[in-house]
Image 1 (cartoon, rainbow over the protein chains, first blue to last red):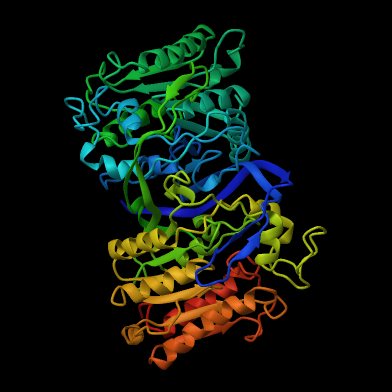
Image 2: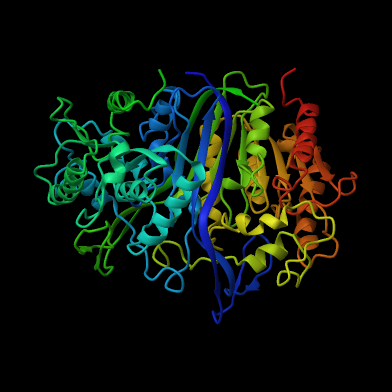
Length: 319
Length: 319
């Protein structure tokens, strides 16, 4: 799977300076063997920035770069090598001819995070393995204790602890700066296809609303939310096709039917406004066993292939 | 600068599970538009893991992969695109024929971090721009207010705010888990050259002590510390050449002479034990103006070339 790469790099985008005063200084040892030194906590800090990393191909087949936006409590690692060690979607879409930008949203990964409550209004939430196991539909409610997965799951549950090493703290109050940074990323990159996962879904839908001439398509993998369409004029999105991909084990879940209900309401409004807004329901299409993380499931290549086919049908991949 | 890439990926390594109980639950809104839900803070969590990302070439010229370990309060972004937008050392060494592993140490970037004081013993330190400006020798003590840099500096000080977006919180008490994760990374990757920056220096020196048959060379870019050599048997490192690279503006600095003194003491002990332990003092070699971040300075390509020459002299690059 050798590929000719033109450029690899990364950058931070968005954010601004804040200044703090009146915080207590304290002694710390920050380098092995050094004497304790008193450090001030006051000063100027950047906040609200995000991070993106790009791999540009020598000869991409896709018309636009693919921006890959992870979900809540996760980072760009979502798209890289899978917890079972097999190649993930960053690799897959590079090999399929896309320039790829994998990013870490505000507050996560290489984007950094800011002190609370002085800058972020609240403390973070540390998502436990229990919460992930159920929310990500690896097993039914109550099954974490014995780690008994859903029958037929394609998530590599024997690698669940490896998966859990990716989890990062998350906040509940940072939607506005996160959206602002994503919007700045779209402006910087220019025309692009936005692929989101979970919490990234609402940010991707909104980014297209904010820049309908720049975002050329939105692909929501299991989006956990979407804008409320009431009062929104969606006609500007007629040239921006939307695809939502949904996995298995939804109907008996205590949370996902409601979350996907809001997504489907938004997609319905898009269609009413004359936009392309399609749902790829994997079990309905005969592909059963996908979790909330189809990019990590054992059939990730097959799901990626269906997404690639959709992009080709939308004219997003060169002849 | 197109290159043939065999594989791009990432993984987490090291760490273990901890379980917390008795913490208060609280209501949070974690997805736009959803109703508040009460989340438990109890449960199982991974802690102590680190993250690494690799780019493997189709036909590397170097004998071993190059592991690039960032400094304190930073992430792997240190090695990527420079704050002024020009290619950094990840690109440079890839183009020079090295497989490259860029990592985020425990507590930083995509490695994630753990709650305090329940898991990490203390709260983090948020390094201000003032502290960075002086500690990284962009300007002399007291010069941050006017942002007046050292005369002749090669750091792109007009991009200092962009640089500051990379800064991440750091802790003072995580040396042991950080070292353990680095040691696990070395075991996983196998024979490799370790290149460190700043706080990474002591971790790299120690990794070689722990695995002298696996670490094939140590290149410390401005290391801020080193092991105390008293009582250490360093003879196992006779096959592991060490190079330390030091920039400009050291002598008048309030902290760096002492920190580099400890490094030089370790290098002296290595030489006494019959090891190769060289110092590349850039100003003494006629290259003036380098900051604590030579990989981001305007002459970064030239400094990288000197490091590459040293590796070639040590037999680390194929004929």
